[in-house]
Image (cartoon, rainbow, N blue to C red; front, top):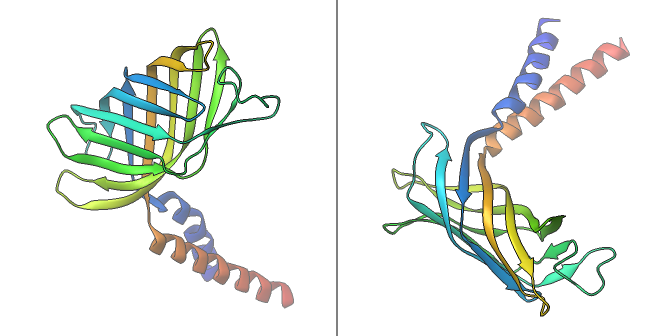
Length: 199
C-alpha cells in the first residue's frame, strides 16, 4: 500500500517539473509589413525578459519573417482582411541584443495564425522553436509560443502595414529525463493497480 501511495504522489508531482526553465519576452513597437508573399517584423523593442533569476531589462530587438499567406475557410481570395495562416516554412525568428549578439535564434514550427479582430486590430500567433543563449554563454534548445497584436491597415493592393501594440513570446526548456521518469512511474503505477485488481 505504501508503494502505491508513493507512486501516486510521484505521478502527480512530476508534471510540475517537466519544464524546468521558462523565459517570457515582452515586446512593443516595431513595424509589420507584407502581403500574400509573407510578413516581416522589424524594429520591435523587447522591454522585459522574465526568466530564471529575473526579471531582466534588456536592450534587445525582436524580428521575424514568415512565408506565404493561405486563406482559411471563407477566405478563398487569400485576403489579409480575413483570417488565414502564414507558412512557417523558411521562417526566421530572432531576438538580438542591441549591442550585438543573438539571444534567441529560431523559426516558426507550424503555420502562424492571422486573425483580423476589427477596428484595425490584427492578431498573429504561432509556435516557435530554436536556440536560446543564456547570459553565461550556455545554449538551450527551447520551444514555445508567440502572440502579437498589431494596429494596421490593408491597402487596395493587399499590402499590410502596421505597428505592434504588444507582443509576448514564451519559450521553455523541456527536460526529457523528467518526462521519461514520469512515464516509468505511470507504467509502474498501472502495474500495481492491475495486480491489486487481480487479487
